[in-house]
Every structure is written in structure tokens, then in C-alpha cells.
Image (cartoon, rainbow, N blue to C red; front, side, top):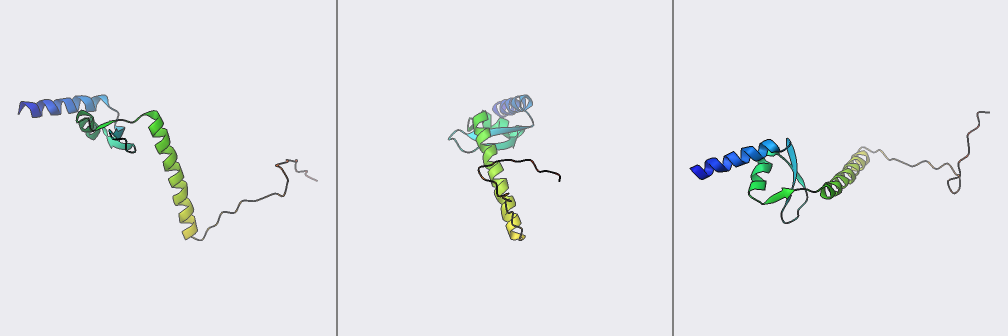
Length: 101
């Protein structure tokens, strides 16, 4: 019984030191996942996960941005909306002011 009490005391102490949500990575190197502090404390104490590094988070955020754009494009396609880039006919990106006359 003492071991269980001590375990939960350690979990609560670690949870109190963490932000509300924590990014963790499996020790085998999976993608980062965001979990609540209580669950993060349990996983960190079990040594099955570690805190994600900033580099891992940057890669994950970039993947999420790309996936979001892809979902938006697919949604537009299903709705029959097509985005067509407008070309102005200028060569080599030459920019000329538009005259008001």
C-alpha cells in the first residue's frame, strides 16, 4: 500500500510542476503527442516517454500546417471550388506602377 501512495504522490508532484498540456515523445522516437499534465506525469515516471524537443515540435507543427492546407483544399474541391492563380502577363516579375490615367 505504501508503494501505491508514494507513486501517486510522485505523480501529483510532477503534475504540479508541468504546464496544463505537455508534448511527449515515446522513447522509441514516435511523433510528438500532446497530453494533459496528469497523464504526462504518469508516462514520464514510467520512463516510457520523454519531453519533446523544440526541433521535434517544429517538424510536427509544419506537418500539421501542411495537413491543414491539404484538408482545406480537399474540402474546397468537394464543394466545387477551384482556386486559380492570376497571371498578369509580365515577364521575369517586372513590376510597373499602374497609372491612374
